[in-house]
Length: 239
Image (cartoon, rainbow, N blue to C red; front, side, top):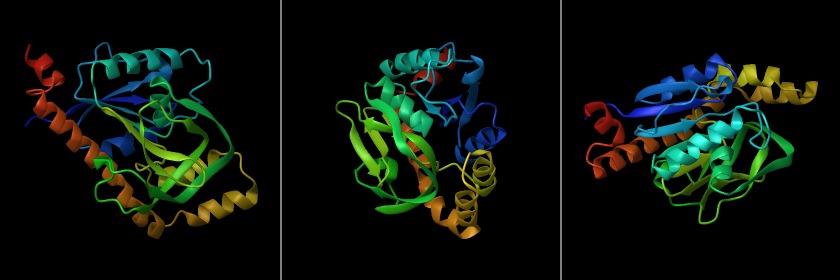
């Protein structure tokens, strides 16, 4: 079977770590689009799509955000499977009719999260697992009909509706990405040092189990492609 063709909507404001991290974690043919710079696919003919994290808020009126929502909505209507990470999780929830809001707190660092659903996205991941987090917005209300998949004391950390999956945590982060993010954030000296002390090889290894969401998502996309007799991207390439 040919490699999956996955659109990556990169909303990370030219953070080179994002490109490196997703290329490392996704065994697929990735077509990346700098959506902050106005780049969007001119087709929905992909086997699947990923929406990354961002420094922005979904509800801001930045001129690049609405076109992203419009393309995502079109692709969802065309049954393209989606995985959203952090901001991408929130954007997918918003497009599907959920509510994203400032949660009045900032979750950052390695957190314990509980897997509450039965989705294949979490196959092989413990009921309680560790993942790196960084967010002050949350999916405050899930889209109608969505299944919650994960949570902790801060917020919802995962949902599924149809072929759309979102996770609030960052399974793609390595220690370099985590440290650089912490140094960028406006934190008290005490909190910054506390979070930096958590970024150890031991905690990173504990969080690696959460990376299975990428493998599980791609396996799901492969199954969708088989059901569709080769997938939209394959059919388009051979047309």
